[in-house]
Length: 267
Length: 336
Image 1 (cartoon, one colour):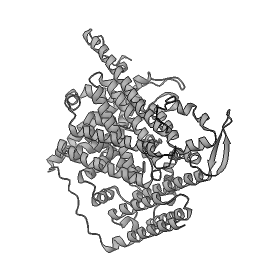
Image 2 (image 1 turned 135 degrees about the vertical axis):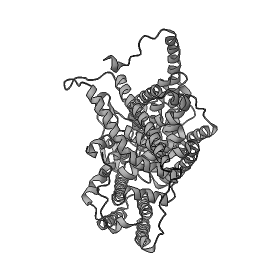
Image 3 (image 1 turned 180 degrees about the vertical axis):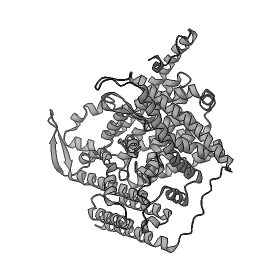
Image 4 (image 1 turned 45 degrees about the horizontal axis):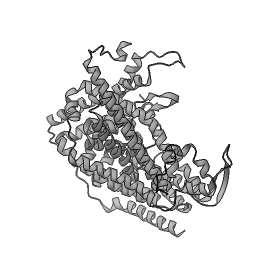
């Protein structure tokens, strides 16, 4: 597996790609916070937030359809929010008779408003997170995290993790291939393999041997680092100074967010 | 190898990665602050314990947990056993290192895969990185002297179960779900998912104990739990109970129950949904939500007691077996 499979749509060049990663991280978080703070049923405010996202996305020269499609990733979680349809007190909209009983479930107007608000908040937040990762290379995200004060060792751990995910993913695939090769599958529909306990033992053993291999690998990585002069200090490139040109657009972005939030409260 | 082929297991809806939009801003920010304190403490303690080895060790092991989450195995009915890894990380490396590893895993999932939100990341690290790790650690440490594998199974199972309970409370606290429904649903689903977690954790512990006995003896069985870990455990317990207490403090019952009362639905609702703890209303407790909270706490303690009993019984049996001559050390797959 190659590390660039993830980075495939990040190499475009646009004003958004060129922004300082620190600024981008903070702006994206501000957008998501603004989504969370928007009151229930403030549809014009959500429309404004969506327009803001669309404007930045168009400026960023990334595939709109790809982002919109991947934006559906949080959709299954909406199942948890279905309950608010019935649980928020309000005027009855639809009454569903429960089968075999004389009782009914009542969908309230306020419940519907809350449900669609949660859906919009979640969708817009995911879209913004996608835009951030689509326009920022992974090393830039790490530099941004470092820049906003995340401890250097923690960012180092994240960076190492990203590097070795691909190595260990290959290791997982090898383990799975070995398992397939040693297991004769019966005809379709017939049970293959042993009891659940037996299967758990096999999978647990695979996880355990992946751990042992990972531990060995981290030792080799550490020794290789020491032999190249590692002293325990992770050295990050100097943070470039933030110029006004880096800040102008994001400041405008945050000002627009504040205006939208104030407007949403006055609606 | 296409990435999508490998990504497929991660794409399965992980009910516990809360996306953005589902937590209210105050809840999300409060969880970020609490999680931030824990992570800073963990960075400090792990740096002391592993010094300059820390970054490569934790980085590769975080990648290990991430990759291990791709393993699944078929359980009955078309569902498959999942693996979260918090309990295993805590058993093998201790709670502080486990917390750091889970933080890296959850952070990367949110930053790169949009699995779990950015604003909700504090809450996600709390449920999947702090609750799972401390529950897993203390259950394993408490029971391992009786039977290592039962201890590892219960550590895995209870860690996932408790994480889902805490996640339900956070969702209800944010007003995005009705507590009684989401708690019943999440707890039931994760009581099943947790079986997979427990089995894989026990299997992995068995292999590591066989492959690296010296590391296992030093790192795990011989580890003395220090005061900081106990205090952190107490703080987590207090926080979880505190979150639950918020519901008990609110004078009005849960929204769904109110509607149910209005519509005469309550009698119907007291069917299967409430039979998890049949008529759990303790004497002097009028608030139904508080009663539900108590039921969860008592249920957890009860399950722990049952697990403790099983582990002790197995210990007695294995001691008897140890005195008998060893018949076979062959593992089932070799026997085939």
